Length: 82
Image: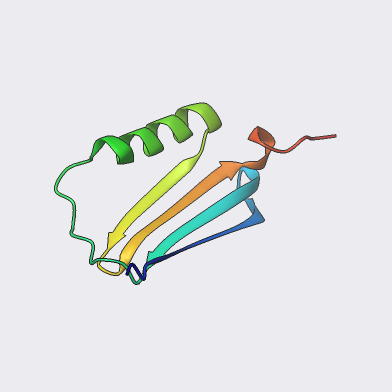
């Protein structure tokens, strides 16, 4: 029976460029992750499309315990401003 877990958290904070939303995706207790030798299709789609469409900064870390993905999106891209 699979025992892996995914936790997803988010917060809003200030950066040098203004407000941002940070999404934090962390996988745990699943199969060990191998270090990647090259960028796969899924990683490429996540990194390129989020950067291009939302001006996001994407950080993928393939840690032995599981994937850790942090996405920082300028708040102006997803929150209404008044």
